[in-house]
Image 1 (cartoon, helix red, strand yellow):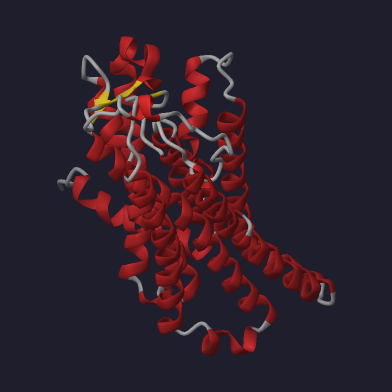
Image 2 (cartoon, rainbow, N blue to C red):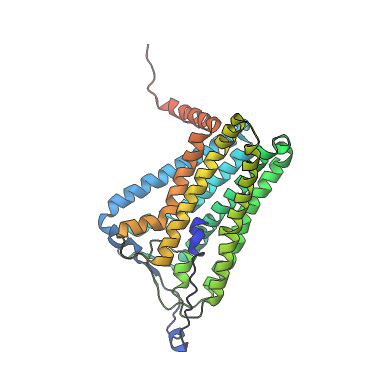
Length: 339
């Protein structure tokens, strides 16, 4: 779950057992102060411009992939439907992040209401979890395509595809719902988060009571997403490698071309996980603030930006359809020719 990935996944085993005196200091939920902005507000117009450009590009690229899949029946096949689901998830995750940051840059104090903080926490974590489960489902699709090509259409029927996508979204939704409910029950004694958005572990750390239940469930979620899903992906690719090892070079080249975008998306996700682990486990306060911010938001910005490019550039049929769509949209903008 990249973000979910390690945001609720890197929950420390530290026990925040503070006595009754601390509990009495807990108050009704005021606004949460986000201190991660640091010096960003001094150059807010630069960051606002970057946010607008980045969010606009993410919307354009992901919407283009979704649009060509919906508009062209030839692309309404399992692989392209999975890619579209991946793009929808990218739009969902970036929408949970970009508007909030943009608004906060224009505030004198970068705050967010407790309710909005919890909602952002839920959205960010479900986005991260769905990213991993969709990658696992797409690995299974590649396995069936390469290892059982004659049975592919019967196994990966459209009802099956939509059930797999539904399961890929429902699985992290249930996990994160329980996670957030466990977090909401905690009384908080502090209201300062050292990031530019809310995530689960940052909120849990504000509590003044024992968080062992949250820690234990966080570990369970870690296993459910960052252990189980990669194991399923590895199993799929081991089977693919076995088939490729017995096949011709042409078959191997075709299989690599088919799997390359998926492998690149997995690599991007793994970078996100490494960044999150580094930040949450080692708290690199010695790093420049801008670098810390980039590492903390990498999984919310880079995958939604790169994934449609990876699939759009690597898959020829998708690339051709996107080019045609863009050309059609640009025709009305051309100056009319006069005799």
